[in-house]
Image 1 (cartoon, rainbow, N blue to C red):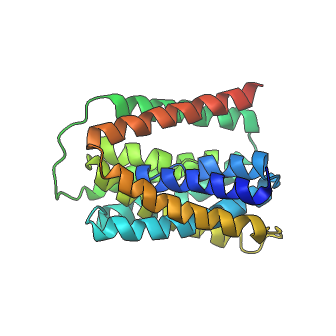
Image 2 (cartoon, helix red, strand yellow):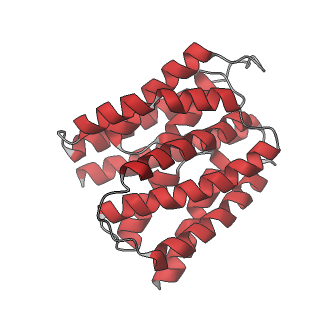
Amino acid sequence: MSALILALVAGAVVGLALGGLGGGGSVLAVPALTYLLGLSPAEAITASLIIVTVTSVTALAGHARDGNVAWRTGLLFAAAGVAPAMLTGAAAGHLPQAALTVAFAVVASVAAMGMLRPARTPAVGEVRTVKAGAAGAGLGAITGLLGVGGGFLAVPALVRVLRLPMRRAVGTSLLVITINSLAALGARAGTAVDLDWAVIAPFTAAAILGAWDGKRHAQRLTGDTLRRIFAYVLLAVAGLMLVDAFV
């Protein structure tokens, strides 16, 4: 199968995850770029950040038009995670990659199991400044340490800790992903990484279309159904990462 077709198919899957579930971009894009399209890990991470940033912005616009973005909560959540992410990111370089992969799989599994528990009734309209900051700082620390997981861990935190309805959590997660991805891209601006735009461009285009399609399909599902789908996808990703760590 040609690289162009692989890029289009993988991009569509990443877009569906981001648009419909509010997460999964980096977790899905990096392996696709590495194992399917032959990019080095460093190239794949940078390319993934570009793809996820552009796709998240376009998906965020659609969710914002529907009123499904908690702007203040999302901004507090993202801002609180910047410093912890930098600190744990520096520490991550001294830890074995296999240990980090296993740690992420465990965290993802715990988040998924939390999503499968019956959700509490959200207090609509209430902005929990302290909880948003604490949850954002915790997520930033985990994301900096493990390298991935922004959206996949943000949605469970927004639902379980901040008690946002699932649809609002998905839209708000896209805001968090956009800010985190831009910050990560800024940190990598001075690195000498060759970017294969012949792969990135079609991948991004397919991801944008997939995100809009994912949002459209998600609108047909109830919040509980969407939450369960998210949890099962998260468990599947955790399982794949454990296999990758031990095989």
